[in-house]
Amino acid sequence: MGWETIIKSRREWSTIPHLYDYGEVRATFSWEKSRRELDGLPDGGLNIAYEAVDRHAAGPLRDHLALRWIGKNGEVRDYTYGRLEELTNRFANVLQRLGVGKGDRVYVLAGRIPELYVTALGTFKNRSVFCPLFSAFGPEPIRARLAIGQAKVLVTTESLYQRKVAGLRASLPHLEQVLLVGDDHKPTHVPGTHDYHWLLAEAGDRFTIAPTDPEDMALLHFTSGTTGAPKGAVHVHQAVVAHHMTGKLALDLHKDDVFWCTADPGWVTGTSYGIIAPLTNGVTSIVDEGDFDAERWYRILQEQQVSVWYTAPTAIRMMMKAGLEPIRKYDLRSLRFLASVGEPLNPEAVVWGQQAFGQPFHDNWWQTETGGIMIANYAAMDIRPGSMGRPLPGIDAAIVKRTEAGGVEEVAEVGVQGELALRPGWPSMFRAYWNEPERYQKCFVGGFYLTGDLAKKDKDGYFWFVGRTDDVIKTSGHLVGPFEVESILIEHKAVAEAGVIGKPDPVAMEVVKAFVSLKDGYEPSHELQRELLGFARARLGAVVAPKEIEFLPSLPRTRSGKIMRRLLKARELGLPEGDTSTLESA
Ligand code: AMP
Image (cartoon, rainbow, N blue to C red; front, side):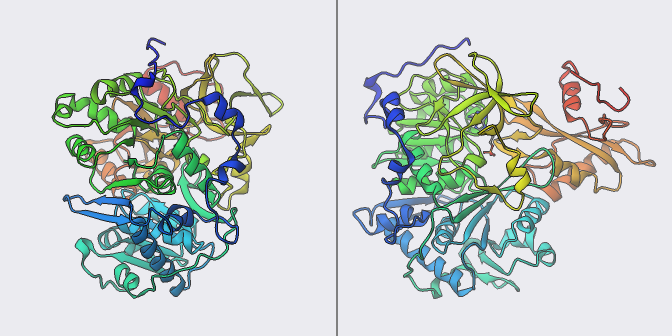
């Protein structure tokens, strides 16, 4: 495939990688055994927050730095495991006082602020369900997700509340409690809300976690499909076993590591690897509130002596654009392991890691539904640039094809494309789509979970990503459902129909592009185009809204009336249109 395998030599290793012997670990691995690496609650149950915080706070790591938060303006706040225990106890007590109990959904809409981490962990302690929302969402995606999951509590900042949520309150009858973090640490006095810090200060600092069944629901993570509303993937406390083990095996976390996961906490990576995995592994986790800025990032890597860095292809491509020059100003010798997730990592980027940081980026693959890393390039493994790596111990992955009888069969030949499928059974596997049993059931065929991704496997068992089986869009690592965008566009008075695709982009991988046809009486114009872009942006937020809008007299539809996004995309790219036999008036 044009790129030479990067051979790992023992000399590179300052520490023996956890998956030093892949074959041996895989052969002897079991999830039951892995669970024994965790402590479990004194009564035998399993609670994520206990494994992440309390067990360390009760032992030699009590004064070890758990989180170091770096504010946008450079302010630094440190949280030891002991301090995190106290704060998360307080937050769990706040929830109790507000009448929030087991299974109730506690949402957070915020950027990377310390309160988000305290809220997540305190919510687990109370056995309530943590649900993060991406702070760049506009009011409509926020409203939809709060309504679908029947949020009882929302933690957000005063400014986000005023801009995006206050106007929605009347349409959210389940939302009983809103807790606001004041901007610039100031107390808040907004009617219908509580001041987060005031409640925390008033609450007791001791809390005993009630018996938690490993199958108790812990997390609700929204993801997008091709059609319909966003789906809430349900995860349980037992997922912590997978977070912990994949943190070790795929990210090679060792006791003394300083780990930096750059993912936004509004998405699954920001929870599984931005909160849970580093803490269960007892390492120091860096949280940067600031947005991407190449030099800022290099400075953080140097100053914080980051040893394990988990980031994403869009950011890597932006660093590549900034060139090698800025990197040379920094001493980045503390870096031991670099990993990437979320979108395909181009081979150039893997190799560029070697030039820039003295080691390649290690791509790994997973998704909201899998809850944790499934396929990875491990520290000890030779890398084939462009490949996602090999399945983790405890994970059976296969390439399958659908059969005419409605089942699936494994593709035996190497190098042949098919759908990437996994045998269910790992602890962080999603347990449901919230209130949508049919959508959930559809993911399982012939004993496999079908991921919706197309991939190939080579003769040595490396998996190679090919594309998606559906129309969801990956833009800067964020999954966007075309239906959500189309639904907003057709709310505009001028729009008759809308079809939304991902248009390839050299940095963001894809950008959202919309095709619209207009109602009678409206004519295409630059003004209307600008108005529609602004309309969508105000409702959906910058990441979800289309970056481009093109007018068409009408959109191609199937005879059953579905807009053919595939055809819109093929035409956009100048590719063959494929089978158009179902096109309305082909
Ligand atoms: P999400 O559920 O938002 O985390 O998105 C998951 C999807 O992102 C996967 O189903 C893939 O389509 C894509 N994805 C994640 N990691 C990779 C990777 N390493 N290579 C290619 N695609 C990836």
